[in-house]
Amino acid sequence: MKKAALLFIILIFIQGCSNSNNNIKITNIQEGGLKMKIISSNFNNNEDIPSKFTCQGQNIRPNLKWSDFPNETKSFAISVIDPDAPVGNFVHWLIYNIPLSVTELKESLEIPESSIEVTNGAGKKQFIGPCPPLGKHRYFFKVYALSVKELNNINSNNFIEKVEENSIASAEIIGLYQKK
Image (cartoon, rainbow, N blue to C red; front, side):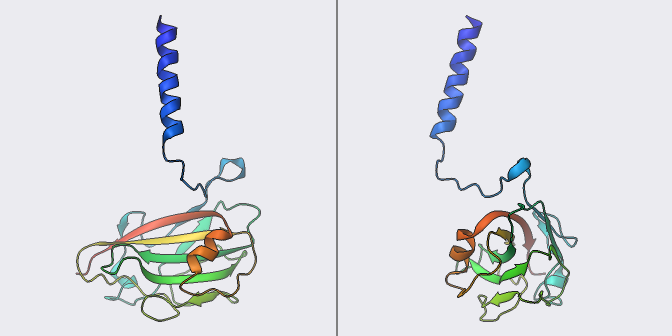
């Protein structure tokens, strides 16, 4: 009787799992079970970004470092987006064609040679720091491992689509900021 009850519970669990969101896109699973990672030496995931990296400071990019990307990776791309902006997803930074040899960007505005920045929400081709008009906003720093060495004809309208088409893994760190 106990075996039958256990089997019944397992079947219900399996059925529930198979009916759950079938539209999930898994991008972080890689060979060997590794999951791509991104960290910053300036803030931890879901914690406040220091004002140095915002419109109330030096307005420079924080340190970003990534690891555990697939062996097939040929280049990287990065997006920084504020989904809490009054206008919806506000783009703070888009960059692609980051060479495979680059796995860390130090805090600054400099970019690796051959990398290309795309126009952000403020109409500039550079990182612009957090500057929320009201309340605390979330800033999603996402690095993509790409299956191609170079992307071409990328603009602010097609960046996410083109990058995701060529993405074999990604990782994300979320920083928070509220004006003081």
